[in-house]
Image (cartoon, rainbow over all chains, first blue to last red):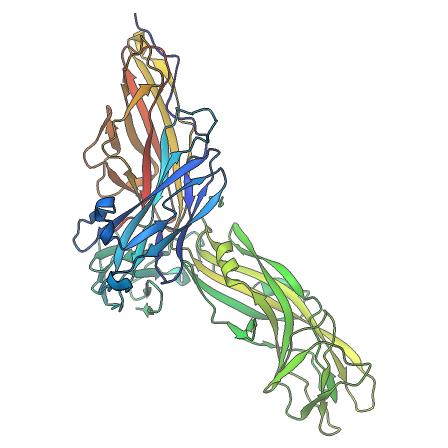
Length: 237
Length: 364
């Protein structure tokens, strides 16, 4: 005879289970760099941070987690590294850039890229009843970029004709992140038109951007900017 | 929480044209907001304040013997509502004064006559004069007077003076769909005028409209919302030979996300099995392995990533990190994350499991 449980609980965290973060890509401005993290659930959260340095030079991104074993080579750290977020509370997590030997700024001939993870766990305040029925917790892992000391913005833009759609092949030959924006919106009157898009292209990488539907041969409006937007160039083709 | 609607660009609209009751010209403030950076090629900084780069041509400003610059009729903080399609946001600005330009070189600046001038402070810069303080509807301490008996055009162009917190403007836009956001702020200003030497001073009120156009390209993932209780209720298969259970979460992402989002298991070696919260004699340590699948309701998987993330408690090959892209366009995606199991004998009890997924940036 089969005996069954009447009720199985995988999770009862309520309807909004995700924490929130204010940005998913942060390019250091050399001053105060931070992420703002918000708990918009009804449950207190304990947030643990983790840093992974990304080597993007090869097609497959190589990850180097920051651990106690390699603390001497950490280029950044998060402050605070762990914190509690009460319901509807926001906190700032600062990204500090570490110094190299002799307290000097580290030299960078190309961008250093990191994934900074904010990993939520349920926080049980002292004295309250433990909640054991917790399921999926949703966290965020935004990227953080320390720009090259001397940004060298070099790239190629190549429109390639496809059977169904044309693409813009962007090859970043420089040493720093670029953002490529395709904006065809002044070519359309339909307010619902698919008319703009963008991509962030890391140094040494190639990205093919599917051109908006309203791309017409003979006209292409492209903007290319670097991390701090000191390089800002428009192309109309 | 941001409004979960998707907007698109609309052609720039000069709302001044929608205000036919005002015989005014408009001066426009245009911003270009790219991600978290703002540029304004139609706004110029005055000491401690801003004005529009473009002047508004005046109308019905008649030649006079003398005139006294005056303040705006309403100054102080204003809340501006920027709108685009079905989306809107507000930000605050502060009106502080008015700048008169194109003042005739045949008029010279001197102290305004007692009883006619006011207390509004001003300053001359070339052929323009800025009223930068004083109460609303007040007049300046100085006047312009003809060097002869001839009448001359007092001024030909004007523009408002204001304070604006661009950081607050960026904050107001954050999370909104990309598009061109517009607003209009009807204003009026006043000045005193003496049309004929020896005549009587009178005052004139003239309207102007300050329009705003913000071209906003968000360049970001604005929000991910997750709905679903996670409560897994059981049922029986036909003939009651097995127990089934399922629950699901709906994940929605909005913003500019043409490359999609990446979802990663924070602990890829996790065993996806529910365990009894209290080990009883009946339940012992029995666990219930479950499946985890993505149902692309308004999205597609990227890079041929699998929809089945977990099969019978085990992580599917290549599923530790998967990419989910918008089904079309660039601005939103939605998918259902479903957990389910089918099991034979299960002792009564409460079973739980816990794991963490991380949403991360796609590095292409």
